Image: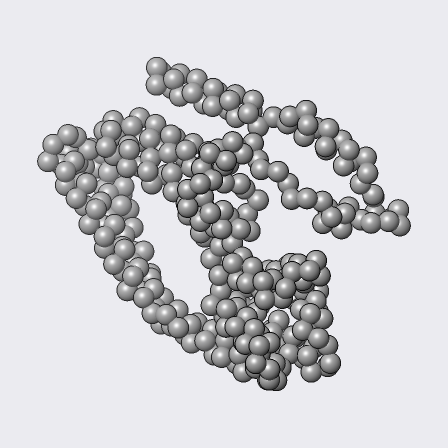
Length: 323
C-alpha cells in the first residue's frame, strides 16, 4: 500500500506539473483569438482556412522550448529533429525528451516494484527511454516504404507530362496534385518552395533530407545531372523507373524467401518465455529459484542475454541482404 500510495502521489504530481507547464500563455491565447477572428470560413468567397495557414509563419516551439534552446548546441539535437521531420510527426524535440524521461521513470518504478533489483530496473529504464525514438524510427520506415511503392507511378506521370510539353516545374505540380500520399504532399512542398524563389536544386535536396529514400536519390540525381549536362529527361526517367521497379521486385522475392528465417527467429525468441509462463501456470512455483537472489537469478540474466544476442544475430542474417 505504501508503494501504491507513493506511485499515485508521484503520478498526480507529474501530471500536475505537466498541466501547469503546458497551459496556454496569455500571448498564445491572444494570438489564437486574433487568428480565429480573421479566419475565413469555407463558402465566403475568400481564402480558405487551410490556404490561409500556408501564409502564416511556422509555429513557435512547444512548451519545452526552453529545453530545446538549452540543448541546441549539441549535434544530437539536429539528428533528433531530422528524425522527427522524416517520421512526419507533429511532436517537438522537447516533448520527445520529456516523453523519453517519463517512460524511463515508469519503467524503472514498475520493474523495481516487481523485481526489487536496482541494476535490472536501471537497465529497463534505459530501454524504455528509447521507446519514443523507436516509435519514430518505425514511422519513418513505414513512410519511406510507402513512398518507394508509389514513387515509380509518380515518375511515370512526370515523364508523360514532359512528353506532353510541360516544363519540369509544371510536371512536379502535376505529380503533387495527382499522386497518392506521401508522394503528393512531398512534391507539393517542392513545388511550393520553388514558387517562393528557392532554386530547384535546393528544393530537391531538401526533399532528400525529408525522405531518405535511395530510389528518390537516384531520381533526383538524374534530374540534376540532366539539368547541368542536358539530354532527354523523359527517357532518363523511364529508364530510372524500370530500374526502380526491378529493384522492388527483387526485394519482394528476397523478403518472401527469408520469411521462414524471420518466423524462425520469432519462434526461437518467444519459445523460452512462453514455456516459462506455461510451466508456471501448470506447476506454480516451479521456477521460483530463478527469481531468488543467487545462482538462479544469475542463470536467468545469462539466459536473457544469450536470447537477445541470438535474436540479434538472426535478425542480421535475415536482413543482411540488400538490393
